Length: 394
Image (cartoon, rainbow, N blue to C red; front, side, top):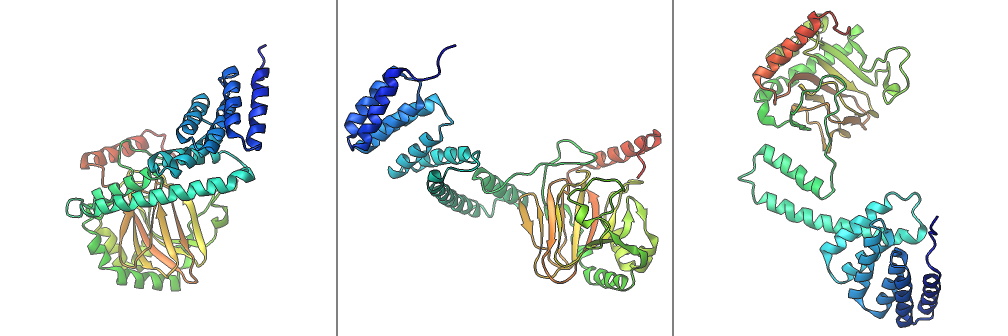
């Protein structure tokens, strides 16, 4: 088997080169390292040592050439990337410095722990990259702002996500469906308001809906129940802390297409408002509509929903300060009486960090990107699946 050790002349020349650097004789060190490389041209470490000698001599181009040679041997050479980043930064070659620092930080992310001598170097690199992306983001945002008369709501939302993701400022989330996935629909986090011109109608009933909820909560009876109710024998999961607890409570008006008539009778204004919504009607599946109550100091963990064929609508009713809602890479604050819709198959979470109850009316409608024919196709699919005799019981 061939030896993996460098040839003896290379080892000795490298030793002499290191000694020369320590003796503050970089010219002699460069000569020794050059002889070592001639004996062992596939050693990235020797190329890095030569780069150190050129750096001490102020030979910037030769230093960069040696670092390039080291990286040509191994693109995973973290130290070579750091030295390359430092040199380009010192020469105000900001694009090349950004590329090198980004590569170094990506490699360093795989280290656990990071060696102490590298900590301040990498911290500097992180600050450089942050400054660079801040500058680029400000410039790109200004360019977008100048297009205000051209970009509509969709263009603005997608363009902003593009800029932020390109500059590493946000993650783009994908659909993760626990049930039915309909292919090729846009993975919108929050749907644009233009898809729901009827929002203003249901928003106008906010006060009446809130009053009915408060009356219901004064004497909820069996209507109020834990939203999370895990089957017996289910292993512990992110839902265990909320299982069979009213920290996240729900009063259902509709559930999987079935009316909860007791609650509907007690909330006639809410029932009428929901009846006017152009929602999905799928026997045994849709609609669902409920009052969602989140107690103080309660969080709903990041999770994804069942199907991307629907949009989930929130009409905020009671929103104390300290509440928030995130879908994918965008976080919003609920505003009482202002509805919005989102795709719940994209990771989302909610929190109530206040000392008061938070309450929202939640219901589902069709994903607005489905055509009328596709909606009909889905209704027929579910009907045929149910009639097959293999429908999974709920």
